Image (tube, rainbow, N blue to C red; front, side, top):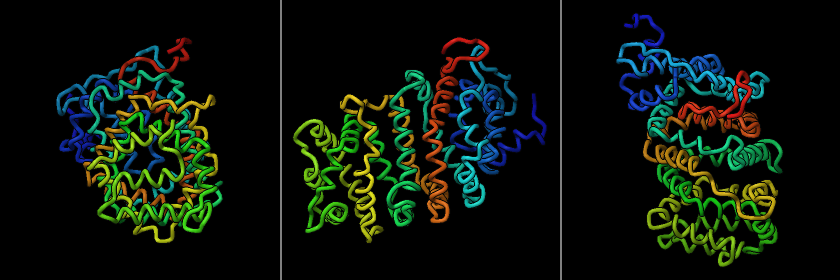
Length: 417
């Protein structure tokens, strides 16, 4: 069926320049499998609080099954309903809806709609679409291998939520406005490509992730920092000086992985389990290319943190016991991050590493969120999202849509997934 000139789906696609967008081919493939004509209306109904441009993106998703689906370029494809025994998309997204309707995301919504200029929001939508095009068929289908109650995923969200709330409201330095200033200066100064590339390599190394969980989750590091005596200073001040020495050392042409390991060796025994795994993993990550990436980041942080803010906040966090939940109750090492999540994380970080325009489009939004008058409230809203495990439903929905296999029991069916 030929669309009329005033058809809203045609208007949306034209407004966003969709026909020429590099993500179009990817979303055209995915839309058939994800049944965009079913999911789209849900997003369109619920997307308005995100602001006009993101709401238009949600309206675009309502047309994925038709505009980008299985029909010809200007033909509406047949409607494809979800499997009758699976719950509707609303069931997966109910935790998110509940937070929205309770007004617990009002600060985040207001920041998006009032503090990010319209052109910056359009650039952000464009960047998100380009990053989305980096994913391949099957990437989200792998999420089906994760059980719905996967403890690793829930633990990561819960811990991140607690850290954000600690930074913005409950920690000793809250709302940590000097830290916000350092981060804002870093956004305007530091080169993001090498940083994201280094993070992509780190996420792809399960031994490194487990080793970092051991380092930050166990009491050894916090106890070592509390008793640290460095350059005539103790505790928090000594930690700030230790971090400063690392940043200064990075400016030397002789900076190498041994420099990092020597400083860590002042705090934990890298020759004994479980920290010997950290030694191996860092030597692998910080190869000839990796050490240059880290060096660039550290040199930049040294320029923007002339008041030694980072070391003090790091001390407060690592001596708070807030990260103890990374360690299982039996004292064993943290479980490895599931391969499906690692693969999605690596793809996302690699896309940001290679797309300078996408990185630049993120900056206005992040700067708005880090403004001194907004950051505490916005970060608290994000913490609420994480603590409520709201992203679980999104991942489960992606897995169900990508595989056509129910991830939640349908109320009508009364069964189990």
